Length: 239
Image 1: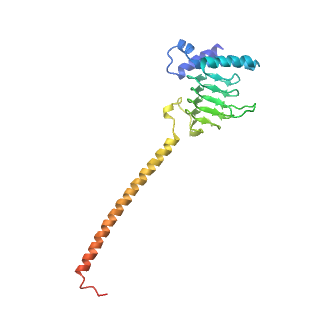
Image 2 (image 1 turned 60 degrees about the horizontal axis):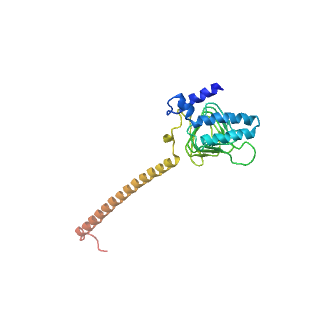
Image 3 (image 1 turned 45 degrees about the vertical axis):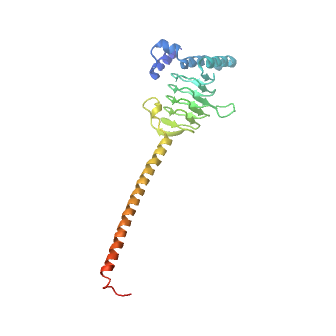
């Protein structure tokens, strides 16, 4: 137990550059408090003391703004940064070393009493306000961009963005999620069409220029023809 507490505090220093000292980490991080209270609630849940577990979970939500169902399984060294508005469903499973930002929803898509929430792999980063819905599997080392909505399985070492979430990169990340550097497929598509349009516009200008040159040459030839006809009019046979 003490080992887990030490790991939790150490994780804050590894994943949040804003923390200044241990006391600040212990007293001023609601994400840390939410994890600790969830462990207590989960203990009672496994003992089938469901009401006690839910009451602790409800108190957790009241104090931290983070709603974690006591049935959810959360691994070691999971860090919830800020955390306000996070919802984690009953059958959710979260692997070790994950980083979850505020507003994230790990929700279900069915009313059946089955595994209806996502399974999150190890070392996964879920960006602000992202939603991961249904009984799907998110692989290890995945990065989910802010506000993405993920409704299907995601392979290991992937980056996912968009609504619905689409895998846009499949290579192991070298650092934690940098929100400003997440690829934007929509912007890429728009830039592609702008580039193509610019090339087409340049080609049309060239064609227009060539047409003007051709018209000038044609006029010169017409004038030369008229001049030749005038000069050699007497030599030409009569029609």
